[in-house]
Image (cartoon, rainbow, N blue to C red; front, side, top):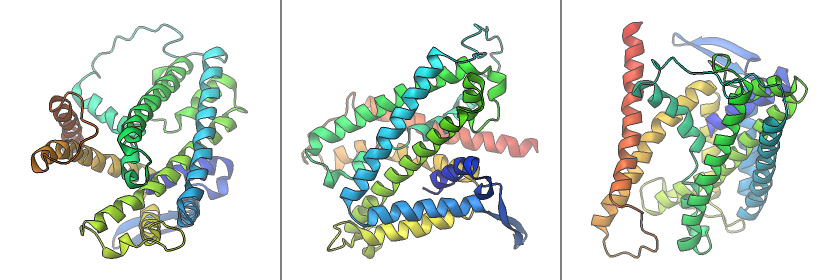
Length: 332
């Protein structure tokens, strides 16, 4: 949530530079460690506070907000993709039929590092599971949500990257964080880039909204199982949502917002994600042995080969990340 909120602030700063992550309010040193606080970090905290307040007042309000944001961001991406494919000034790798001859970068180490960013793009595929107790006909709708959600994100991701590769040569993409803006400027000029920056900002805000929605349900379930603080299973008598979990989630993620940069937050997030993805895959196998007789309306395809393959891929990315970081330290 902190990573998403700071990413939102990055794009918010495009429209209001005085409130960007580059607009520093404080620069100091704490125990020998340099620390900076930017206006953008406070915008990130404000985004978390607003969306947490929306979720505090009941699931219906939160879902309404989430549905609107989902519609707007999918519509905006569709417009960008259609226009990017149909018109615009293209100088990219796909458009110019460049032949790629430098295969030195195609080794497992670089592919693994590339997957770090890609995994965060797909993060959230499991989110519907976190609200399982509030889903109607879960035996049908949860698998359907997982499959359709993942296929939709895959399709969107592929189409957007095709547009990027039509617009820009690969050497211009290196080291660029806000690639959407650069591609839009190349395709349509500087003015429509405002639309693309707004589109990405709305997308991130919608993703943050979804994360704030499902997160407290995890803490609630953990508290019910006596694996987390007892107060987290408190349900508000009027709003019927875990309001204490929502509040403390907002507090902790806000602290993280003011503690670090977007890059640091996102790297930590993905580094932890692959560990938990692997643990999730192992849990499927372990629960088959521990609880063989519980009802299973949905069974995993290709069990146990697919869950084991899923575990190995995530574990490999985790090990590769450590290996790459150690290699950088040794070189320094």
